[in-house]
Image 1: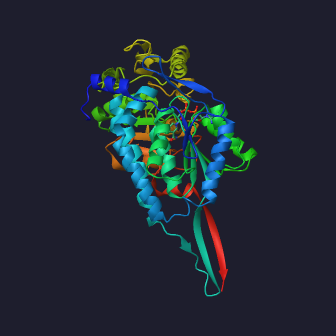
Image 2: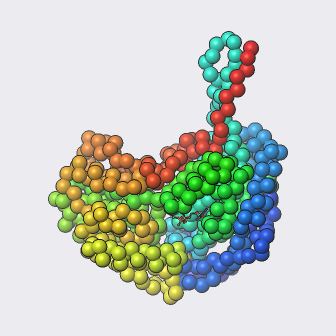
Image 3: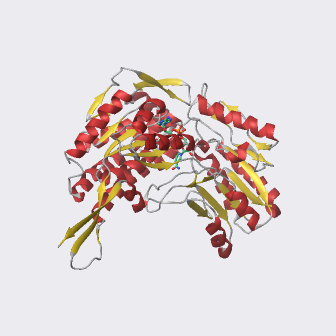
Length: 496
Ligand code: NAD
């Protein structure tokens, strides 16, 4: 099955029934207003389908159902081992639908089918399974207080959790929230990005098929300023768990503060520095540096978008990097041979092209790329683009472009590399190449980032926390640390 050809995928796409409705209280339903929005295939510019455009009224309905499920304890009242079984069924269904998930992602947001098959589908299933497995192995605590009392420290679910997620890895970002929030017993409302709503609806359908009670996982497709803001300001939502841009993350924290002080966990943007020291494995580093910015069209929060190269190897390295970039030409997302696909939509495509223009007017030199291209008629594609002679003061070096655009800078000492890497409002990821273990550890300790990659880029696993320093966010997705976010800590003092 995984050996499907371009033609096979096109045929599968033609036969696919696309999900279009919200899921509220266990039912497939239209928005109360009857409104819909168009979902466009970015590889062709053609309409895929129209999807329910939920707004504040639908949010009210979903929050009421979520609260009811929570208060009736149909989910949080189950033994962890029983919730585990439901979530394992959910994970099994996700794994069984990995090809459908991959196809929907490729159609909806333009990523290459090979990426979606290799990462998005399997990582989504694994995340749910991992959290399910964890939940009946976590113990509460008893405080050491002596004979006069029994002092219990226990964790309880928050209640109603709203998960607002972006379009770049729609199912994986959703799973990073759903896994721990559902495992700990919360009712969850998932609001996908308006740019990629389809797989979120499928996730909701599969959770229902796995037997999750009504109201426990609901899906509200819709726009950020409508459904998203209604969740952010809702007085009966206990937590917003968000992945997206820093600007929207800040906005949601204000909404939380001005409404009911709901818990807020923000996973936001990045401008991650990738440092190549002269004593690194330069062949591997050049190949990895290209992948770090061009994978998923550069629409990756941890994209290695600032490449810092040591002076003594600069020319040689740039030569190797340019050759690697040439291998990332975009193609049709349904062609398994395409290394890069389409940019998610026209707005993002134009934004990236504007940044390329800004880079040129700021005085950076184009090493390669810099233009839109059309491997498929009507689609939104951009060539792999590299700027040299980039200065830290330039906007292209400070602002998140979220596209296949790399900024290259030079450094001449270890201290300078660290200072340049940390010269950012963001702190999501950083990486370095060096064969000197002393230097690798010394430098990684000084990099102000939530994740540091040594002699690789984007290494990680469900067992490792993921999140940012500085304006890249707070809280962590993945690992056992993520479970803590979705619980309140209760102290019970029993006088003896
Ligand atoms: P975005 O902030 O525009 O949108 C994210 C989500 O927020 C969407 O569901 C959107 O509808 C919603 N939203 C928008 N405006 C809102 C409002 N006023 N109120 C409530 N909700 C609102 O981000 P995006 O363009 O979808 O995603 C790209 C961003 O996500 C990049 O900055 C990227 O770095 C970041 N990201 C971060 C991580 C991480 O783990 N740190 C992972 C993936 C993506």
